[in-house]
Length: 560
Image 1: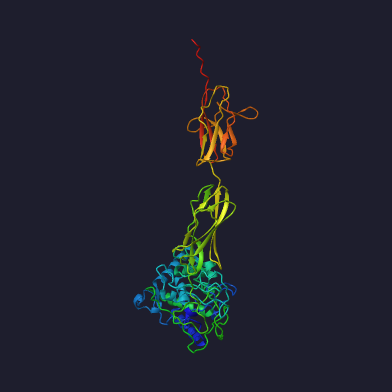
Image 2: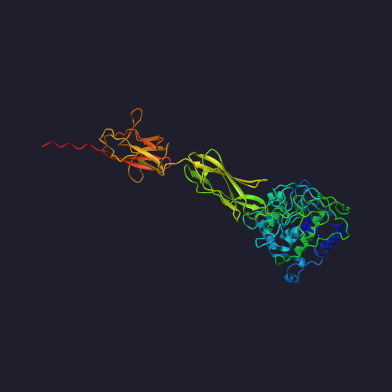
């Protein structure tokens, strides 16, 4: 991985022979429970086909092998935490992330039987256990771990897929983080392993869980040798890679111990030692097994990613150090905006709020965000504007001005845009609803009386309003009802008349006019005297009960 990998590249024929001897010694002394398929051929061991993707893009990796004098298993004569080999020490946060990923997979995909030691082995060769445990309290690396640009020059050709959001490179992809995922693979397999609401490839908890799920893809059972080989080869299509991971896997199964973060042992990144060009290793398809002659060309890139970082600041010959990502815009995300809805003529209670992050996922201040209203309504930001640009604050957030709904109802959109060359865009749907009457009341207070069998002299007139504003077109139902706690339609007393002159005690499809006023048809009394009730109800639930009295006129007293 260019400058960050230092001397962590593939080795020449001499080193390959040493690696084979070391693996043989490990196999003899440790009796691995899941041996390589004969010859180490990916096809024989159940590897993915050459057309399958790979997590890392076949980038370089640390080729150091574990010491032949391995630690004993826990419970043996060796007090491992005190006298175990330094190579067996895994930084606390890194070790915790591997074990947490194993637990998570055990609860969601127990059939896979993922051992955390396999994650540790891959983490060792990909990032030297995240550079010896240089992570913060949340498990995020202090600085990005980036592979070389996958520009087709000694590595795979993978053009940019993330706008530089993860790897800081808007031209080509690079492998990122402790487990060296390329952006396009992370987009599919990324996980939130530490529950902070983000999927960050630079976080060991997120990356370890993503690696675990990637290794468990499909119906793999990692307790089966062929499935384990296939899983590792899907991470990097290289027989040497498989042998290296397998050797560390067996080593860690013999025993490990926790060391403080930042104190882990970094691989030395052995070269051939002869000054010759680095050995490219086997091809991505898994050819070049036992007895193959190493080619002088560079190691093929890993499918899906790139190489692993090196602790050495000196780049390998003929490579260009990857640029350090600048504080540039990486993403724009919703910062908690709730549903955007309001009634015509009112202000929206919710406001659009967004957050800008840089290419490393940190909040980015002073980023200009333009908010724009589009759609067939007359909603505007406060001040009557339909477009406004504001900078983000120190925490990367910015809130749009208050939205004020006009009289036009319907849906509209608010877009938030940041960045110029590759704009980041968020779109929110908002709606303006028509006013619904919250009150219905009579326009006068005249007493409504009639004699038995006569017509009420005065007409009932009501007005529907919403917060004191007249509401046109309000649907109203008028019903003559009985009294009591559960009123029903009355079958006697005052009534309306239909076109044929028949008594009707319920009217529907009544609507207020443009001024919100409704004048009811004439009301008639039958021969039953008493006090009766007329209930008026709007579709929005506003209710009014009107009292109707049917009584005989008072008898006249003759003059003396």
